[in-house]
Image (cartoon, one colour):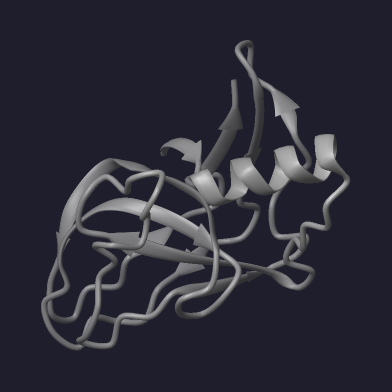
Length: 138
């Protein structure tokens, strides 16, 4: 995933570090969602897939490897598979991913494009295998 922090997350971190303001991070894990386009920084969930059995997937705290350096930045990857529900109908073209603090709505921390976008059709099960979802700080 080519990725970036959202405006919400950037502002929260900067305010916490430089202004001493409280910023709440998820304590029990994150929720992974799919979008039908490359998500924007200011409204990353605008084109989140909906309907036909789609739901964000909860990934509990600890299900990402510790950060490592890959030559150009710090990187974390999922250490368990992330499997979405089986599509009960066509979801359409999945080309983006979001990482949020809630099953629906909530705050989006990261957004990015999928390396290999694809159509998710009736009966398909979209999945990130182990180490397929990388989040990197350059």
